[in-house]
Image 1 (cartoon, rainbow, N blue to C red):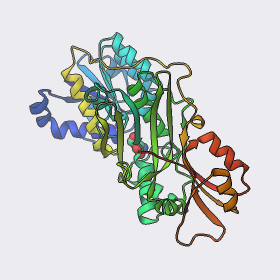
Image 2: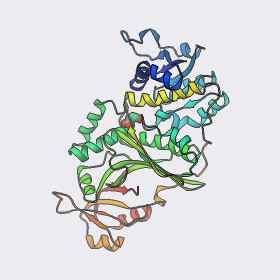
Image 3: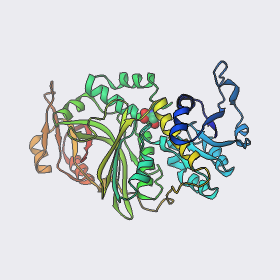
Image 4: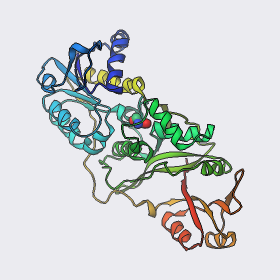
Length: 406
Ligand code: HSE
């Protein structure tokens, strides 16, 4: 089957490499023969081994009837959306690694795929090389899923790991992640939680059957986490992780959010370090399942793309049943109405007043703790109640971080 790749960057070039290196084993194991025949990129690739098949004209791909499957690894919504839609309408299968595209336009593109009886698959859009979408939609299809929680951004997990294990500063760790090619072009999307938020929107849509659009989903990143917070968390037998989560509250309500959380050391998610991602799926029949692997990087992400390409080739005549409904009004719960415990770090606090306000709290300690510095974990209550109580206390709050219960 002939393949075209839109965007010859980190992931697109990885896809070409995996297909080239593994074509024999792909043929043997899946009975599918894959060949990259066209690549779209506006940059100059003189001297590159694919130089002769690189074009800067999308119509060379759209108009080429010998191309059956198009891989979109451009990122962003424009012009990726127009290109993908045009390919689907032309009867070509499309595989995308583009989480922004799927999170914002997934329903529309899935409908276009259905109308044209072709596949639109996007395993690589969440968790890089980790199989998540297919296991959730196939292997766990017999379950009612109640909750999905994951470490879904490799860059921020890499940064937090460097802070926790090596005491590295946030800025130095970010620079290292960028040098390793994990970060987005604009790393704000990584460190402020936007990238993980797009991914959990996709998983929430898949788990509960309604498209969850990024607008209106609460997301908080890791840029305000300090080494002091990391040290206090350790005294609570915890590590700080950026957790993207969704929980079904009823048939009409789900919580979807991203924020740093204190994760207990005995949690399956606590040992997920460096660029690795993990996704915990809670099913009524299976209980908790954890999928774990490299969440970013050229070949790891290409592995997921090529898996989808093989699926498209195997289901080239008969479309896979795969999709979800459009958004449901008033579906997203307000996180302030949901229960959690909060870690709080402050100065100028009065312990007696804290205990009177919260009933009881657990105090945390760290080496070289400031004489006026205090850290504690509140009881579990609705977040709004906890924040209202904190606002009434006369102290200088430096950090507030939620806890996790998985
Ligand atoms: N910047 C993303 C990450 C790449 O760090 O996880 C994979 O989506």
